[in-house]
Image 1: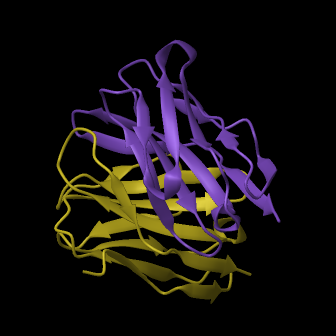
Image 2: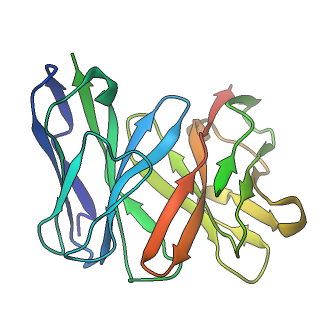
Length: 114
Length: 115
């Protein structure tokens, strides 16, 4: 049971390049999330998917797109990377469709945009 | 609007000393509260959570937190800090309703432990 996995671990992009961050969970969770972490700002929600087939914007969705490929996988795409998107990206998942539950986090992807 | 405030950006304590990390939340409904810890270069690990019931919550690694509704606080405590506790600590409030289920995080408190 690997929990939440993310690939890649590190990535360097040039401004304008595109890339997709991958996330998978093997806990049969319904909901999945993408956060970004920046110094002094904590974690901010980019997008989330409450269940397979649905996605919703979080606090900071601009410049990102997401795909909930199936129940296990939730990808985050940067179509045209900008230096402001340099950050650490975390994926998380949780069980249940509603009500309070614990979110479980992946190890993160460190992205540098030059 | 919902928010979480962690007033202390950085705290240094001596090994063996007691620790209290502050967390205040703003949320109109019943709060569901979490503390996570992040070691350097790692993801977030759940320390403890409060959903209901006893307002003093025990977590992993000897941590506890007390929910005080009157003060809108959920402070994290440990009686004796170990060097391995050096990490960043995040408080979060859960927002649930309809199709919404998400966490709002504070900005974190970075804990340094002196030998």
